[in-house]
Image 1: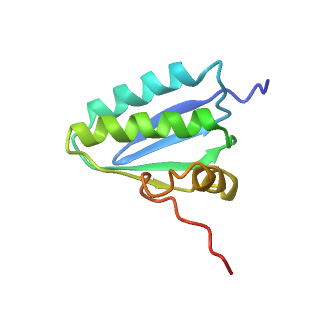
Image 2: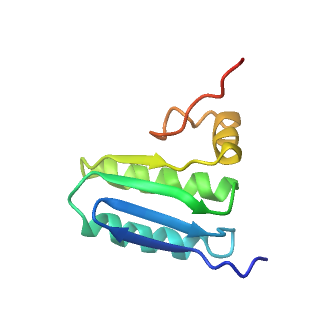
Image 3: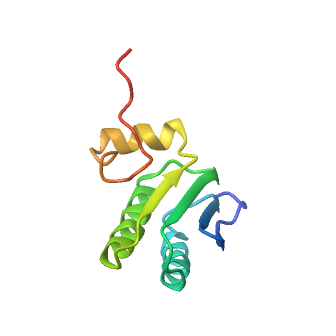
Length: 107
């Protein structure tokens, strides 16, 4: 396991997810992100550029946050999506459910 502990910060309308997320720490990060989302009334940009993980637990985490925000009529848009995480979302058929993810080009 990596020593690059994950964190979630909210500055203005940007929620930043950083570090390495794995099955052992994802629940704590999910809860921290939920607190930050609930503390904001604004639509949020979720910056993933400082995250070092492309794992299915990350997709689960992002879907949970997206569902929570949607239930509050709050939009989340994901930015800084790594090619690897985007590819994993595409393989899972989730890229259309996560704003900011895109279908890989066929060219």
